[in-house]
Every structure is written in C-alpha cells, then in structure tokens.
Length: 227
Ligand SMILES: [Zn+2]
Image 1 (cartoon, rainbow, N blue to C red):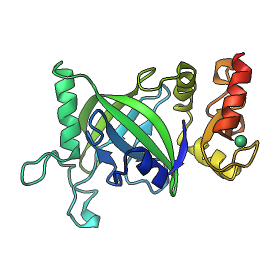
Image 2: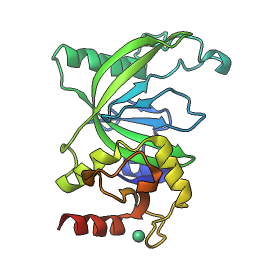
Image 3: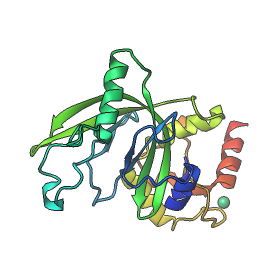
Image 4: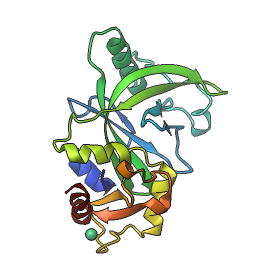
C-alpha cells in the first residue's frame, strides 16, 4: 500500500482529475472512488474489521451548500442522466441479477491534506438507500479483492492486512513519523509497516505497531521475515 501525494495519484491514474470523489468507469476496466477519514470529511464512509467498506453516495450538485445535507441523494439529474450514485447503483442491480460481474473499484483514502493511501481494488457487491435521520443517502458495499490486479502474491498478503489499519492509526503514525521513512528519512514511496508482522499477531490497530518505511526498507524487512 502506497502513501502518495495527490498529484502522484492523478499521474498514476492517467492524469484524470478525480476530485469529484466518485468516478464510475473512469478507467474503462475500473472505477475510482476517493474517501476521507478526516474530521471534516464530507461523507460518512466506514471501514469494517473484515476490510469491507461502506461508502456513502454523493449529494445533489447545484444546490445551495446549506441544503446539500438536507435533500435526498439523487439517482439522476433533472435531465434523466444518471448521477454517479445512479451509475454505481445500476452496476449493483445488474450484478445482483447476474447480468454483469461486480464492478471493480479502486479506492484512495485521504489521511490528511494532500496525502492519500492507495487501498487497492474492491468489488462493488451491494448498494441501497438508507435514511440518515434527515434524508435518504446511498450506501455502497465494497469488498476487498485479493490476488487479482497485483502481480506479486507476497505483496497482496501485506496489502490485505494494511487495509485493516484504521484511518485514525494511519493519521497518528503519519504525524508521529513526520511523513518520513523511519530508517532513512525518505519522503517518497512510503508504506505502512507492521513492526510485529500481522502473521505473528502484530496489531493493525495500535499505532505503536505501525511505522512508515520507504519501499526499499519495507522490501528489505519483508524479505528478511520471509526467508
Ligand atoms: Zn528508507
């Protein structure tokens, strides 16, 4: 799992502006969603212990800011064209009827201004409307995919475990480690590393067991553990 800056994220995804957050089919074979765990995050996204993400749909556009959180999230624009909610929801309905395979979704998670975590690929397996107390919002269920898009199986195991690091732990570790590799001070190609490996019951939920390492030192460490 990579910690990347927004401009690197855009570059990795072919130079497409992703700021609207939900980007159905934007890469042809897959969609991209952005989620945030910041305190002021606009949507109530959740990550569960099994790695499943409950991703909230997006509010109506072109309405006054103070009304955005009061009106139902729309499936379509007034023209009838589906919104991003509509496109994701259609994909879910088709998948549930067996008309298509689950949509492939790449998830990026913002841990602080300009800093994103590449969470890898998920299957879009469900979606529904839910009342949040004020109005109806969409919830989309994203299930982590293993061993599909990542060529190196050893990496996959680590990716799966890293998906379970809670957002607040990522934020705390990033700040504590000053955004630098703890071995060499590098600020690029950073990964979250389990000090005691997950396979040896090291915790994903204790910041003391997670540190920032650059790709080089992360690799060195995992090789040592494997061989
Ligand atoms: Zn390093």
